[in-house]
Image (cartoon, rainbow, N blue to C red):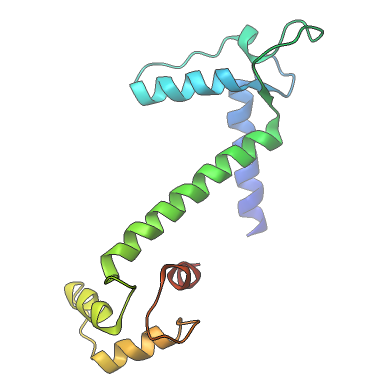
Length: 146
């Protein structure tokens, strides 16, 4: 797991370096925004060296800059938001109005080609049902999926 984090860190550093053309360890937020907008629109993103830092540090600028640590946090927060969205979509496949019941689990498993009895589904749910109400709510589902 540690080597995975090191590899991820190296990848973040590599991407950050692409933005940091001036090699000052800072990237302007507007530069990142322009690149993201270009990617969304299908255009080629261009990072100008002058845009990455304030040429005169004595002057005030409205544009904030990110250092590598800030950049990493920004990227990882986006990844977490994507994971949460994916979990919510998966949860909706199983849930009835109040959460995942043994009946809804049985139905979904059946659709996936896995035949289980209602009793089997009750046992499966009981393994992750933290509040012991017989239903998997979203928080329990999230914990189960981690």
